[in-house]
Length: 357
Image (cartoon, rainbow, N blue to C red; front, side, top):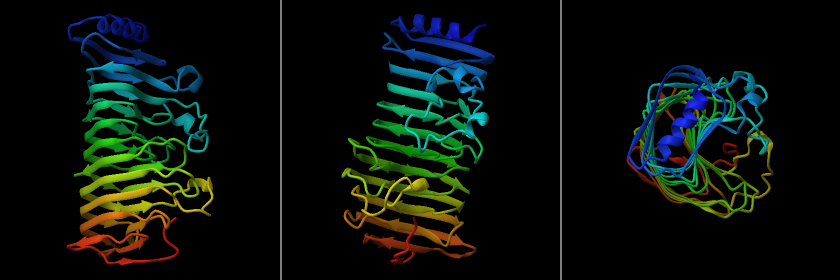
C-alpha cells in the first residue's frame, strides 16, 4: 500500500461525502509531507494504527508541517499509531528559536480546524514542534502522547495560538521544550490531567516580541503533574518591546511538582540566548491570576518567582495553599512589582533586585 497516495484519495472521497466517513490504515509506513484540506461536506474520522515514519532528511519531508490538516470541521484523528518524525539528525542544526525562517517541519499542523478531536495517537521525535494549533475553535486533544528526549531543542509538545476553546486532556508529554505553550490569541483553554516531563513546563507565552499580537484570556491549568522539568507553570513576556497587550483570567490549580526547577514563575524579563535588551521593562499587562493548591518538591530554593514588570505591575493575583519543599525545607517566594492576595499556607514574598532572569 502506498499510504500517501491512498490517504490523499481516501481523504478526497471522504471529504466529498455528506455522510460520516472513516478512513482506516494500519501497518508500518514512511510518509512524506501531506496536507489534508477542507472544507468537507460531512464529518470525517481518520483512524491509524501502527507506525508512520517521516523521512530522516528535512528536504525529503517537503513542508514546514509533516502532516497538515486545514479548513476542516468535525474531524476525528485517532488510533494507536506512533508518528515518528525521526528528528534526531535535525536537532543539532535546530535554530528555530532564533531564526524565524526556520525550515524544520513540525509533526502536526492544525490550521482552521473546528469541532474536532485528536485521540490516542503518539507524536515521537519531531524535528520541530510536535503539534501546532492555529486559528482553531472547539478543538480537543484527549489521550494524546508526545515523546522526545530532553536534549531535543525547540520541540514543544502542543503549541496553541489564536485559537478558542481548546482542551488538552489526559495527555502525557515528554520533550525538550515546553510541554504545552500558549501563544498570542489563545482564549478559553483548558489543560487538565496532563503529565509533563522532561520538558520546560506548562507555559503561557512568550508574548511581547512581535507586533500585532493578540491578548491571552481565560486559561485554566488544572490537575497536572510535572516531573523534573526546567519550569513548572510559567508566564513569560519579553522586555524592551513595544507591545502593550494583556494576559488575563488565568487559573493554576491542583498541580503536583516532582523535583521541578522554578515551580511557579512569572518571568517578564524573558530573553533566551540574550536575543533582546533589558533596558526597558515589558509592557505586557498580567492580571486576574489564581494560583491554588500547588504541592510537591522543588529543585530550586525559590519555589515561587513573580518577576512582574515595573511599568505594568501584575494585578489581581490571588495565591492560596502553596506547599513546596526544597531538600526537605519549605521553599521561598520572590516577588517584584506585584502585591498578591495570600490565603492559607503560602511562603511570604520577599523582594530581590537580582530576581530570576
